[in-house]
Amino acid sequence: MQHETVIVLDFGGQYNQLIARRVRENNVYCEIYSYKTDLSVIKAKNPKGIIFTGGPNSVYLEDSPTIDPEIFSWGVPVLGICYGSQLMMHLLGGHVCRAPEREYGKTEVFVNTESKLFTDVQPSTICWMSHNDYIEQAAPGFQITAHTANCPVAAVENAEKGLYAVQFHPEVLHTAEGKKMLRNFVYNVCGCSGDWKMDSFVENNIKALRERIGEGKVLCALSGGVDSSVLAAMLAKAIGKQLTCVFVNHGLLRKNEKEEVCSVFGPGNANGFDINFICVDARDRYFSKLKGVTEPERKRKIIGEEFIRVFEEEAKKIGKVDFLAQGTIYPDVVESGLGGESTVIKSHHNVGGLPKDMSFEGVVEPLRGLFKDEVRALGRMLGLPKTLVERQPFPGPGLAIRVIGEVTCERLHILREADAIVREEIRRSRVKADQYFCVLTNVRSVGVMGDFRTYDYTLAIRAVRTNDFMTCEYARLPHTLLSRMSTRITNEVQGVNRVVYDITGKPPATIEWE
Image (tube, rainbow, N blue to C red; front, side, top):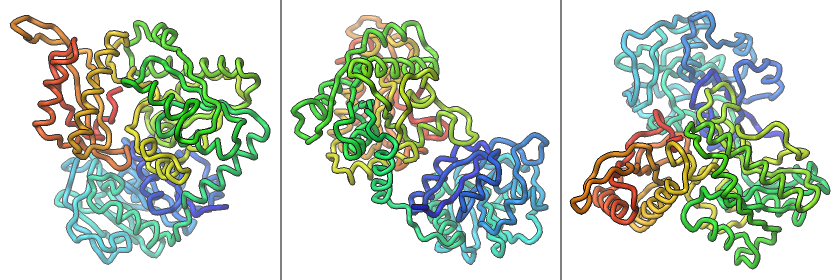
């Protein structure tokens, strides 16, 4: 089935995946492409609308990303965001220059509510600004529909041609009515009906998996996390006993996690999973490879390499295996620098760490185009238990990227015990936090315990609120809770004498530290 599609053209913005996610929230399928993509490819997609992302460049400089103005003549609605808005104006005869005053952060924006883009939006609304340049003069034929105290052209439109541009970022949570604006663009401007539904995704992808795999055998990387669990459930429905799931204990798991995973998926499990399940103890080989390594991207590459090698070895033991299945999701792809023009934020073990000389016929990644909340919705449709579907996110490289610096058994033990305390206390307190964990820093400081001098590690606690994991704000944990966690950690975990709380949002940080 051919779905209505909105195309996001990436000009180097870090929010490109978030724009796509916001469109999908409205039941409209969305894909991200680089601005360098040949226009014939974009046109062949028959898009209902096109969105230009932000980016770090200045449109008036010679080497800045640009696009053929032909795209504006297709009769397809276009929404430019930040750099995308400036580019639209620059190409169509407006004037963009350095702003007298840079705008960054939450800003009051005054909008014309008669615009289709701002239907049901408050005349004065809070939006997220992040720009050094601004539109000094709108292009001919465009009407200014929003402004701020320092930005005379915060939004413009040529409604007749379906061309809209906003200087702010409607896709981030910091823009109070941003979701409403994007919905207005998708439905009021593009005329979408909303035919992207998860039930059709399940049906179509199970059919596609059967056609691609045929009689082949599939080896599934099962971590026990949300993504790999949903992957295993989908493959079980598609190919049954042709599937073998392998769980690798790399020694980088949270406390008691190996036991929990085996109880859920292993032989005799109470969840009805009729799968071939293998548990591999690979702790020694991972620790050997990670010895002396401190650079985050190098850690991820090493873990990715070993990830594949372990599965290759297991495949040989069980006979010919044709495909490797992975729970790769869309944010993994984008953050690894493979979804458009964005800078590599961090390589994911199942994306950027894949070696090129794999012995499998191919890789099966049916979740590759989904966002985390879409994966959770899919899991519920597939009948997975709530405890699995709503499990705390855990990175593929495990605790290795929550130990800053070299990964050793001693440092992992410290982090594992402290992390268990944090997760226990937050769950018990029932405060609202969507992800929470500990980070063992490589900072050591002087302390005093029992009248003795200590020189131990500083541990950081991280807890965030988010509904998409693309942006977040730190969770406002009660001081009593923070104090209790700090007291327990310093009393119960040897090697920690200082606890700090990370109050940084995303952006400018990421959720994980590495």
